[in-house]
Image 1 (spheres, rainbow, N blue to C red):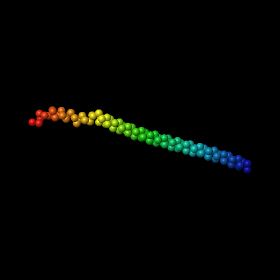
Image 2: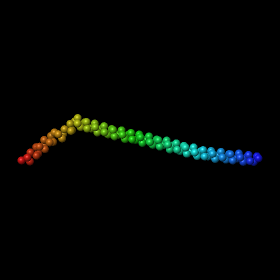
Image 3: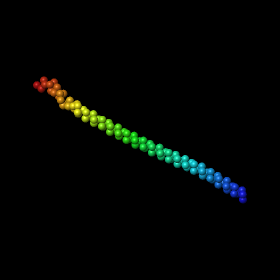
Image 4: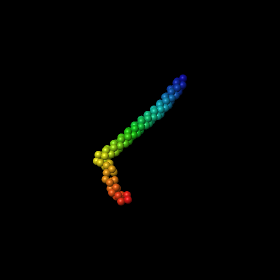
Length: 98
């Protein structure tokens, strides 16, 4: 009877150790899955920040381009083509009219 009780205690100890090993493995899998989830979320956040940065660069580029066009109009660069260039062409082609 005592031998049977010791055998049952030994078997229960073996089963407890086996369950603890399984729990450790499950905990490691859960931990790795949680870490993978955190890394995936961090990657998505970094990707979103990168897209926001690209949109900001595009807006700054367009703002700079519009500012350059405004300065060109203010300084009269747009009037060059409508001014003296066409008058010189009229002078150059005066003898071809006859």
